[in-house]
Length: 185
Image (cartoon, rainbow, N blue to C red; front, side, top):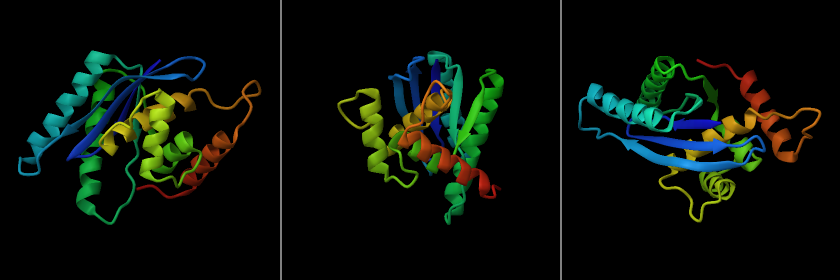
């Protein structure tokens, strides 16, 4: 299965595509960051990022899109940019008839590192290790997009009676439960 992971942002939007086997082995297909300049008009910025995301969809033909869920921050401008790009991704998923899944930052951290409170550098290190890369993808938005895609891939292969639980999957399940208990806006 091929999965497109998106770390939404208006200034920098991480785009990562992975291929995952039935054995949960993940391989890098594409990684990049779509950027827009804050001096440009809002519609041009959103349009530019939308075109780059759609180009990735057309070129890499993902069967699934994974998107980081918008969460509350003190910086309203950042939240608005993330929400606007998330809307673009929702529209593109609809347009191309691709299933879309949302993940909170703590779900992603738990899935990739085993801890829902992992630091950004820990996430990047584990992404490189999981994908067999010699270096951590830069900037962090690129590594985050891949981590989101990996989370979606692994969630597709949840723990069942023939797949025993591990410490990482238990931590991940706890993060999912904690996220479900929080109020979302």
